[in-house]
Image (cartoon, rainbow, N blue to C red; front, side):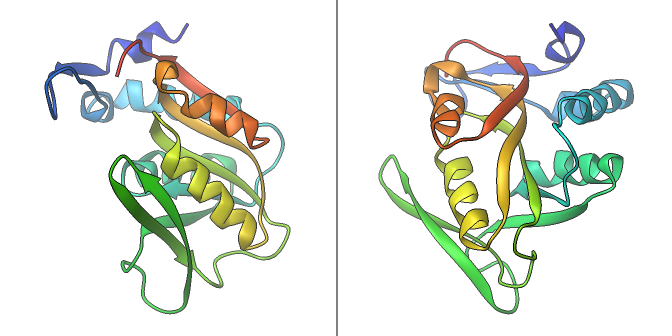
Length: 176
């Protein structure tokens, strides 16, 4: 399914390090028809109305903004900590070696806002799970997430499902 989208995603072996098969969505973004198909199909999978689309920095901004327009929703930026002006709330999450932190504006959403989480790719799910915790801490109702690519062997989509999130992705690739 979605082979027309899969064919527009380039695979670069051994990037950024040996053994990694990098799924490069820039080739999809360069293709106007492919980009339109991607946004249309992501929109078709959304369950019910959403008030905001939360895009994870940085490629999630690209798909999230286009999807927000299509859905008639606002666009909320989930950024690396320290990148937003004004008051923010943040959430830490574990990396392979250490931790990182994401943030949103403290006034970015009203309590009870229905939020769809969006990113280009779900791998281990660390950032996406932190985004869900952060959005919920801010008062959002987050029940669904949408990704262009899933790397199921890394378990991120399953972890999100364990957090009560309905996960939709357009294509899945084996490996890392």
